[in-house]
Length: 635
Picture 1 (cartoon, rainbow, N blue to C red):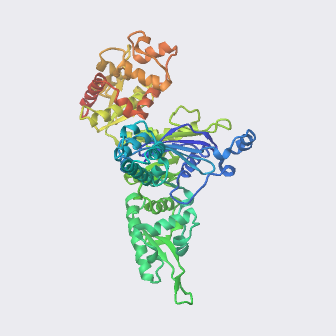
Picture 2 (picture 1 turned 90 degrees about the vertical axis):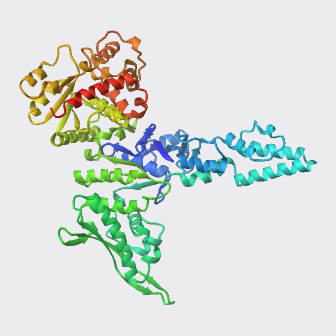
């Protein structure tokens, strides 16, 4: 099953999150402290936790300022559903269901809904066609007068019909035997349950568990091995120790064996696995090595049996400085990273794959180490698992994957926390991580890239990047990978940017065409800041002046983006004039200018859906632009 969307309701400071789309690989919840990010993960975790067994509790989790009021209004708080999710049937799930109930009862991609109430009862809507399952069963039975069963839409109706037919044909021995055999086969087929319960036995093992990891899940320096391997009431940190001991197939017989050498060998095997990951993903100091150790004390019980009373102690050997230190004397960032490696090892190959929930991961890490962890997410976690993580760090936001970002903002006692993919928030603190990520990415490109393509704004960046990537997958003309696209924040800033850096970097400029032209850029070309051929006007591509980058789209296609962004219903016939489409829209709406970034954001968020609707003339215009841009490489 794949997680498609989540809705949290009446949980801590979230009153109604609306339906939050979850990305196929990674979803990033961005917001400041106490905005509701952790509440969102915590509610989702309780749906089906991978470890521990957290429960929903009205006194602990229901919004405190509403609990008394809602009780007085007669609302049954125990029946409120704080978590509701939509999952999607995958190929293996469909095959498992069809193996039991035959073909056609459900399709790959169909929706499966789950919710949990405050009294911790699970509810589901499976989306399977019981009518088709019934038809499949009837088709496999040797039933007399089989046409009489065509109108039956459920197994309950079929059972009732068979009972009636058995009573009618009590004196027809051969028919009676056929009917009784069919009814017995039906009960065996459903295992004396109804369709939903029989289907649940197939589906419930295939539902993903939610693996939640937070700051308090970190490893301790030491832990009692016997307790960790046997006790049921483990804390989060003890559960991480348990994962570490289980790494590499470590079994109780080894770790509880009175033979010290056997136990030591098992721990060294664990250390080898973790040390490899540390070397690969902890570039801050790849010369660290894990050195778990154990105390040894064997107690004679008096009946000829022995019990091992020992502790695991985790030390880290630093080959750079030739010393070892207790695990807890290393940086908080390293403790978190290493602890997560240990905890995740237990679930990396779990079937079905878990959904990983990370609450403020890598918060204690340096920016470069956070980049390492993002690489770990991409290279290891997303191979099998979906990942949802929260952050307020700009270094944990990937500027080239902003479609993964959901903003979380607490809008006060009346509205509560809101989770949205709309960046039009008034809260600067909420937006800061995105702004910081984009700014850092821009600076990195300026100092690293040899060839920079300067555009006016982020909407230009989105259109060029997304459509170029799409054309590349089709083997068509696209931007050369050597280009780094640099949005500078507006047409008026392009000349300033060129003046500051044109002498130091290789720049090609793509700008909208204006009636008055671009005299400043022309003068800069004359003064040697950049070559004339490196100034590319959109009007040169679309064949008219003035023209904006939005005019590369067919009218209807850009209007679809605009309408989706602003909830409008404009059609080409509503627009007057032959000037750029953004000007005609603004005139129709009675405004000087609308936010050009919002239609681009629609393409960014729903790229696959939008790209499938774009026409050949649109793609040809973008290809012509890319040809002009690529020609300037090396000039």
